[in-house]
Image (cartoon, rainbow over all chains, first blue to last red):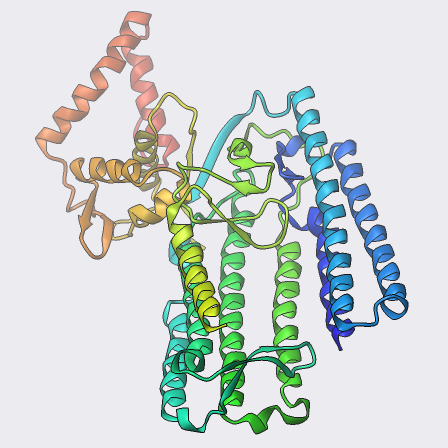
Length: 365
Length: 134
């Protein structure tokens, strides 16, 4: 079971790592802004191809080594866990190292060929775009709060019925493997953790809504379409995640009140369903992004280009821009969004619920 | 699909708030934005442009002073209709005042009255507003 779950996660992560250069904006190559007349440069094309090949082949190699040693060298479950995680991190380390090498290469090429030095940099905005923004409204993310509130009241009303030991951790096979003695705080700690997660989801969607709809200046219509759809799908995905977390935690909490629910691996399908939903939604999002991707033609001559924001992206990965009011921006290398680390709002939306969540887990353990 | 694109050059000598003001006025002149249309909120436009909120606020207030939009507390910045912004003698005076240094510069550089008149008519015709003699 552990191996099966791991294989799914591993293969999906590997596929995403391999295809990242072909999913992100074509004018941003390994985290470097490239004017559109230069995006088809053969050196860039080769870099992307080699990156995908090396990451793909080494990923498969790691997997084969891991499967071989899984049966021969790792008898205990603890060792198996270490082995699986080691394999995943080794693959990520390879892809990050390759990213870094290519990032430096592209930067050097851009400097040497003096790309974009004589092109006017322009930022385009559609004044009507906001009226077409289809991010789901806030009630969709606040409804699960009601479930949490109900669950807390329900738990307190049934406090006497709860066994003296409360499960707080579940193994990969869906069976509880860690317990704490019963107090009012440990009894409601799980709904409280769930509440923090729901708050985080709501905060993230709200902040994405307030963040920029960024257009490509030479492909305004297409990029507008891409932006509006990405925002819509993102809000759906987060809603899905919020609802499935709510269901998962509700089932786990109810199983604490009615321990008979856990007998005979009955929780296993819930875990598997949760995993499938989360992984599936990431995959669908990446697929949609690939289809919405604005494609550029060879040898076009553009008089203007998008504003080169490379100086705000540390290593092409971490966005730090004091002037930008956006809290979240789309990743330059990867699928999804990343935080503007210079915006304090981001720390409140992500950091505060995370801190409270950690405090709850710390004190209830 | 209704779109109304504006373009900002962050490195230009013209301040960003002024670029925003000019482009919104041009959008109205071209008929891309109609009376009664709402401009995005200051917060949203600032996010989309990647600039400080004060910049957009300054631009909206300038547009309000010129009598082009009305800012309402709840519904936002709304474009006024032609009746609502009927040209007053003061506004006409202001336009003349703004135009004067440009025309004078042209005179000193040797542009004739006909050339300057032609330029003004060209601006009108570029924005597809019918005028005689172009």
